[in-house]
Image (tube, rainbow, N blue to C red):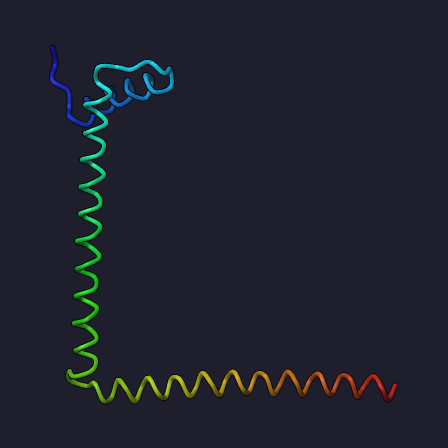
Amino acid sequence: MPAISYERYMFFHLLGVLRSLVSGKQSPHTTRYNSIEINILKTMDITKKAKDELEKRIKRIEDFIAEKGVGSSYLARAKRVQRNINLAIVIGSLITFAGITVWLLNREDKE
């Protein structure tokens, strides 16, 4: 009998479990595979929690460096300048739009 990979083994057995679930018949393997599935889901949940925790720690370190690190004052100034530029663009766009609207309304009155 040739050896098969674990993934292939799991695929065929889970396929059998799915067949038994669809047919409504209880397979002797169903309980075992349900526990395997639960263990896989728990492992995935633990992995996700660990990943989230690492991302939070990295974000805190990045924030600390941005606040206290070399060039932090320059970074804060650059953020303020960028914010002010964005506000100027938005306000300029609104004024331009209002001006064009008023011009179009007055132009239609003269015609």
